[in-house]
Image 1 (cartoon, one colour):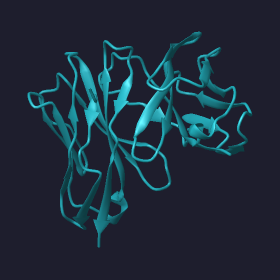
Image 2 (image 1 turned 180 degrees about the vertical axis):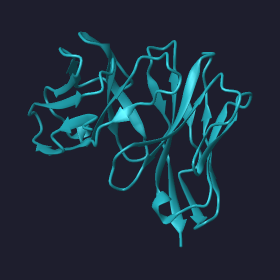
Image 3 (image 1 turned 90 degrees about the vertical axis):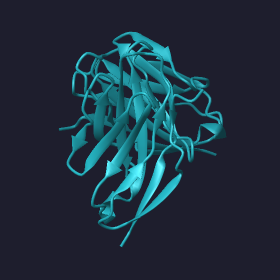
Length: 115
Length: 115
């Protein structure tokens, strides 16, 4: 079974609008971390935001927020006030404490911001 | 701020040739990882290391070997390159799990083509 599932291969959003990128995960480990990364066309991986499995509040970092629904095992990324520079691939990842500290990545969502 | 440095950035090999990719990090991270990224498949873990002198297999280890003789370096070797190993290779490093919000830090990637 896939550890991380991103069901949206591609998304479009109008500039200045908000967009939600979906991510669901599968784990039986009670202690884990969820991460989102951005990969622009230049290729580098940029860390955006983190949510711990024991965190009570949703994480926020500037225009990024993580909608963490633990019972549903979802960790959706919300980007508010989209900008043209947000056009990129976005990857959701999970780190489990009890599996050798591996990180598991989803297949990514390509976001295009339309002017 | 060097972070994670990968060399080389680009390389073209002929089938059957061997080569080594070098990853160096200056953040004193315990954990290091090698991934490959192929279109539509996200990042797949090849091998990883949780400390100097230790390595472990990831999701797609066949055809690759690794070594971590020094804490700051993680080498990925292809003994006999095959066209199926054409990919973009990323190295990453991270701290030990403990601090709750420690992401991986990535290098800029190595684009490898096998003819």
